[in-house]
Image (cartoon, rainbow, N blue to C red; front, side):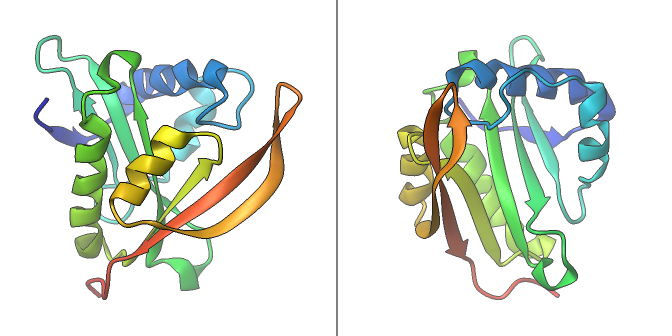
Length: 171
């Protein structure tokens, strides 16, 4: 699958939320325990923008349906951290295992310096081996481990913070 992504519009939010919600039952990707509503994600959507913290979507070339999304999000929300961003990648079930996550992560790392980002972070559950492998395959290192901070269906889970320094970002 060749990567073609675009900036998300508010019309994409229901598809973004549907993909997100499809990951909730797996207990691999998100700490949400129940599906979220589109309405609850409107403020989150508006916290993103093409110039600083993009939210990208990937459309299926055959159907035009959104099959993946990637977001750059503020890390810790304080001005001194503006050159650091968390990257999150979510794939529709039909798009998993086809290399799309690799392509999106590569595109995000290539775009980061022009966005003023020189430190990229991933927050990944310790039992999500596929995502850990993906990020580590791009040179991310473990910068932190929060043991047993999440409880998913009665099971305590670790959160691993992976980081990658890209060098000096554009001013």
